[in-house]
Length: 509
Image (tube, rainbow, N blue to C red):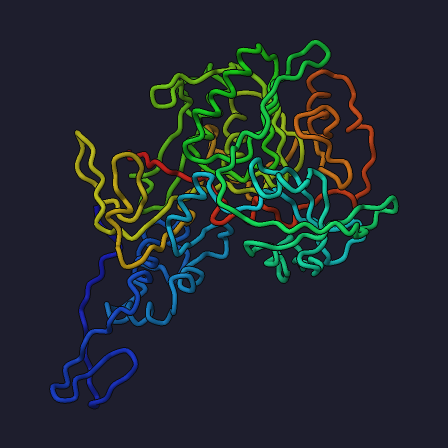
């Protein structure tokens, strides 16, 4: 296999006078041109990793295989950036919404495993009823064993300011934030200033001010799992809020409980789920079904350099390693998904659609139809597998027996989480950058959130209506447009380094 990162390091010298410049050093006694010294090895890693794996590598001029005339030209370019982060931003395609770079891979790996720092409030940021550029935060749920859980913060509470400063965000026509003070929510400790929504649909401060402190927490992605019996129908309900690595067994056990309760229908609530492990999503699809084991579930399409090697297929499975999967054998599933539903959650919606009826209730999803991998500075990594030729596989963080990080450059801890491919379902559909459209549109609204997993919560009520045929209050009640929650940002989106289907284990063709 040819490595497109190798350069023909031929230096063509033309010396017109004995002088020095900032890049090429000339020895005044011998007039010998010396090589440009690379100033930052992390910059070298960033460029080479992006040149190799980035989905849009062939569209980014600065990542071109023939971009540099020689080694000195290459080093001169890299030395023009004072940090890998600045370089990374230059190398990104305008199409890219989700790639990320971190200066400490330990933090990245923690986040992908569901470990991160939080004060315990999961919130959405939206406009207040009076509109304008102001922003209010709405508490969606509180994480157990967090600081917020000890301070009487509840679902539906509204905050309008941080440390007495009112929140604002200016957005463009596509909803992208162009200017804001939302970084007020970044510090370890801050005070939230709360408000009420009046009968006149106005935001009125209520003099409740709560200081909150963040701590490292491993959040249980299964917030609610229960069975409801409505009109003689047993309805399983599971609210799943992320797809962290190593959560599959717990998810399988929760599905097993629903199966033991002989549920007739399933409501899968992914409304706040920003995604995560593609392997977990694959296994969840297999839990919901069971009648399609070993059939094609989806495909991962990489760039031209790697697709023949790393492009892969996902199949419905019946085990998690050696643990049997609990199959529900359903031919229909009701999935609650909103404008904060993304990535591996969308994988479940899209990849189940060719096989069973997927009833999408809620709002248009985010449209993260791409996949990413973690890359670290280990250019000499080789993939070894019995019965096949050793494969040079630089940079990718591998699972299992491989010690990817231990063998990486000890001089820095930078890691990349770039977009490396696109996910498609078994029918070849994967182009949904504008989001997946709901079958039944219903947005959450200020003042009417209800309790998650309980009848009376509007989105769950709508799902129950579609199951039982009994009209719910959700479909009858009118909600003014200025009371609908339209996500500007959220705690899901503000989690570090999230955003795509993470492929923690690479399939080699």
